[in-house]
Image (cartoon, rainbow, N blue to C red):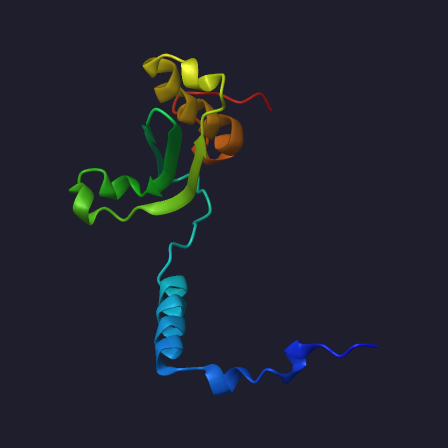
Length: 125
């Protein structure tokens, strides 16, 4: 059986200060990355979308009712989802309004439970 050359490579002999710094930066990015929250019924849900000719994106988040009156800069947004995609070939021919609507429809299909119950609605029990 042929022995693997990988077994003979000593990683620490090649690990430079530059690699250590890059590894530390990557760890910091992971630690400081967004942590998605769980949807809560007592929170207000907001959907932000953006589209271009080729791509779309959406951000779904929640804030407490007390934060509504505050400036957006000091509101405590809790992210629920970051979703993006590219339009398929047939979708590239859609009108601008169809493209702008697509992320909203996608959000409701994929994350409908995050929007909770609409005010004034009733449920059959």
